[in-house]
Length: 279
Image: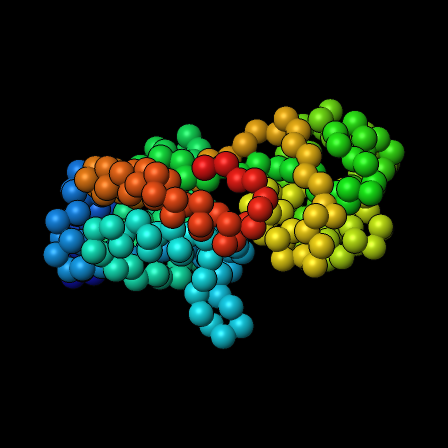
């Protein structure tokens, strides 16, 4: 019995030691992420690791060939080209992006990443490089130029999208005006555009970055109209560890340079055509 009690006691002490060690490791990771400036290390090795969800059209996604393309891909490469640094893009579980960042698996989160107060508690952000907002897309022939013009008409929205959340959270802006006060929900924006073109819905509430991209790739892009309401806009920015103060300065300076020399406008036009975007 004494031997058993001794063994149980020893096991308990060992488990407590492991827990303390793990706790200490967690604290060390947090401390490093919040205090360590890694720019010199990244500059020396010659590349920076960017984490992304590679299915986020048009910010970062894979073509049928498997090639990684997108607005953020082009922008990130252009920024780091200014400093002679290459980029290694790494696909991650998007729900774990901040953990991957703080653990050092990746150096940046650059993939249509929206600034918000909750994220700012653990992640540092660059300046905003692209504004995203909810817009109402319609065919010009339907003469819908305001949310009021959707009164009694059928609205489409993607299930689970930020557009759907905005619609539900601010019903007076649009939801209460549409037919039956209930939108038609779609699994993809592609299917929603098919119904819009066929006249089965009269308007589509959609992220502006998606809208601009899809309209650019439609056969007759001039046939569409975008109407802005009063839904709160979103700021896309680059996420990084709080300790990477030099990285933040370099990225912000790079974004300003690309805007000044016209590179940003070229990237905008490549992905969104003549659709107006706000940087």
